[in-house]
Image (cartoon, rainbow, N blue to C red; front, top):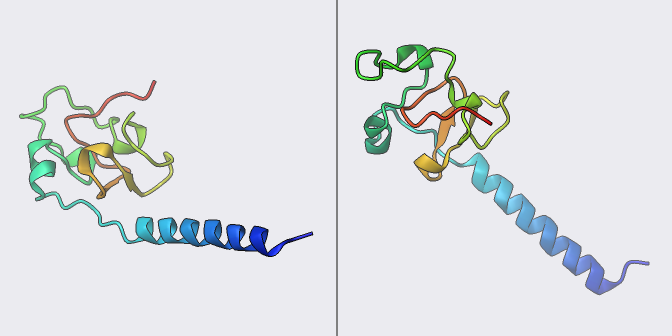
Length: 101
């Protein structure tokens, strides 16, 4: 039996979940010219990383296989704590790349 109190509680939870989903959908993609991106050598495509400045970089290092990537490996874009609310590209790279354990 659904009581009025239960209905209102469920409606509130559903509303907050919807709001969180909309906030994520509105997240902006990081610009390679963003000061934080520049400081970390971030690029949307790992093959475009500066090999002179980052000699230890390898093309198999990508955001989507980094320990900091907050999405699934198949996600095209996802969050990274280094860039706040901005999204990074799955095939991207930055100098903070760390192998997933």
